[in-house]
Length: 367
Image (tube, rainbow, N blue to C red; front, side, top):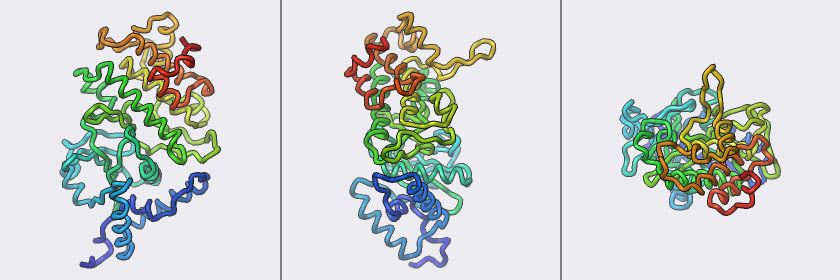
């Protein structure tokens, strides 16, 4: 039956917009990407397809759903029902971009609800959709679908039953000590492999710009899933870095990015170094010392390495339940990644190899 007015049409599904908009070739430049995002935003603002457009969208989804793009079409009614009208008891977490709710389905979903309809939030929403539409990797959070209509902007993901790495290191789950040493190394390598995919295999390459423990989610098997691509930057082929407004979280920002806005893949490497030290030590990236002085985790760990006191860096809750050689290797990799000089940092591909113990020569200079 044909709807009586356009307001009763099904909402725009952003994955369909991404299929219908012209694909960006591997050699995109900044202008073409910006134009693509602007096109996407204009389509979002329209909120409804024509009847013919909706039929084309359904055909597009049907054609792609069985392949490498398993998107699902959600209505607002479905997501309201799944989250019990975004009930407080269903809330999984909250950030600057939006609030995430658990949704009841066969497998469970996580629904991110945009906080406010501002131009900034709309752009971050469009960027996250653009990035998630490009990537598919076992260590990146999988996309399930979208809803965009009226004042609502919703992104649907796979539900991660073990929540975030942050919750296990510093939050309410930390007391349970579910992260033994093997799991910590599994998570570190998984997060590194996810970032390596973004930097070296995605086309164009992608800089995450907000690598931190709250953006590493854990599935039922504690497999790491890098999440939250609202600040991500796509890097055109042949471009080594960009200068942009600083985004991210204090304590994880590479100094050259924090001071001058110079962003490159090496900025994610620095953030990963901080995250790796957090995984090993369960210390926060920045701590307050007496007198109000702040010290970051790298400044804390480096002197201990110089003294050869590697074991003092390990999370005290682990006791002696860790592999000393793996600990030294992980700390050495972390400090190399968090080197103040970006030229001295490994690539994420190299960091993966180092964590797996395949890059001893690179570490000899440090240890």
